[in-house]
Length: 135
Length: 347
Image (cartoon, rainbow over all chains, first blue to last red; front, side, top):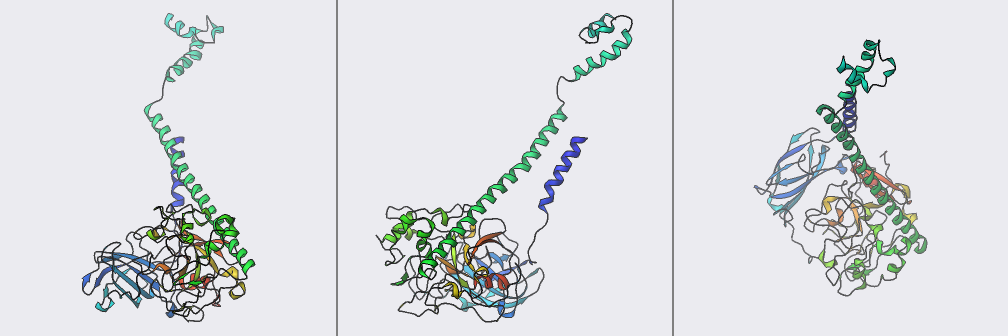
C-alpha cells in the first residue's frame, strides 16, 4: 500500500511541470494557397502584425504543402490577429526555385479561423537584375 | 511431539526446555514460519521494485538533459559576453564600433574578424588583411581564415558549425567554420512611438536590404550607390541608451540549417546590395523566418536551439535571455534600434 502511494506521488510530481504555457495569445489559421489559380507546391506564409496600423503581437508562420497551409502544422506558429501583413513565398518544390512572392495587408479576426490565399499572376518572381552573387 | 522438538532444536529459546513446551512452541514456531517465508520475492514485489526504479530513472534523465542544456546556455551567454567586451575593446581603441571599407563590391572582413585581438586570438588577428575583400578570391588570405575554428563564435547547442556555402571552402576542399552570433544591423519595420518607418541603408533589396538604425550596420560607401549611413557607429550615437539596445544576437536555430543552409564563413563582411553575413536586420520574430532561395538572407530570424528564446548581448555589454514570445513591433524592433526614441514596455 505504501509503495503504491509513493509511486502515485511520484507520478503526480512528474505531471506538474508539464502544465502551462506562457506568452501572448495566438490563434490558428489554415486554408488554401494558390498562385494564379494553381495550388502552390511548397512555400511559407509569414503573418506579421502590421506596425503601421499600430497592431502588435507575435509573428505567425505556416508552411505551404501542396496548396494548403496550417499554422498548426509542423514548425508553424499561430497568428496574433488584427491588421496583419501577409507575406507569401511560393517555391517549385522544397528547396526549389522561387515561383512567386507577394505581400499584402489584411484585417484578420482575433479567433481561430480559415483564410484562403490567392496570389495574383503579377506576383511572379521578380527577375534578378544583378548577377547572382557567390553566396 | 518428536517432530515439534526437531523443529525447535535450532531455536535459541532452548532455556525453557521441558514442561513449558507449549509456551516454547508458540515462541519459536512463529520464528520458524517466518524464516520459511523469507526464501524469495513474489512476482508482484519484484514488479513494484522494477516500476519504482523505472520511475526514478524517468525522473533523473530529463533532469540530466536540462542540466546539460543549462550548461550549454551559460557557455553561449559567456561567448556573447566575450564578443560584447571585444567590441567595447575595439571601440576603446578606434573610437567607433567596427567600420568597413568598400573594396570592389565587397566590404572588408566582418566585425567578428576585427575583434580577434580583443578576444585573445592575437595570432589569427595578425593574419587578417583589412585591405583585401572578405569575399572569396582564390588565394585571398582572408578566405583562408575560415578554416580556423573559433569556439567563441559557436553556440554549443547547435551542431552545425561549418559554412553551408561551397565558395567558403578551403583550397583543399575542407569546409570553413561559421558563426552562430550576428551583429544587429537595426530594425526593419515601423517605429511604434513615432509611426515612421525605420531607416534602410541605400537601395539594397536583394537579400532583404540593410537596416541602418542598429549598432553594427552596413555602412561602407560604394561608388555605385550612396548608403544612408556612411560612418561607423560610436557609443554617443546610441541615443536610446546602450542598455536598451541590442548589439549581438544569437542566430543559430535549427531552421537555418534545414531546407537551405544559411551559415556562412565567420570572417565574411558584406556584399553591396546583397548579403551581409556579419549582421542581420531585425524584421522578424525569433525562430520564424528561414532562409529561402537567395531572397532574404539579411532578414532571417534570430533565435537559438535553447528552449524558449535566445541570448542577446546589449550595447552596455550585458547579456540577457530574451523570450521567443516577445512582442515584435513594440519590443523587439525598438530594442534593435539605437536612436528611435521608443518607449519600450517590460519584456
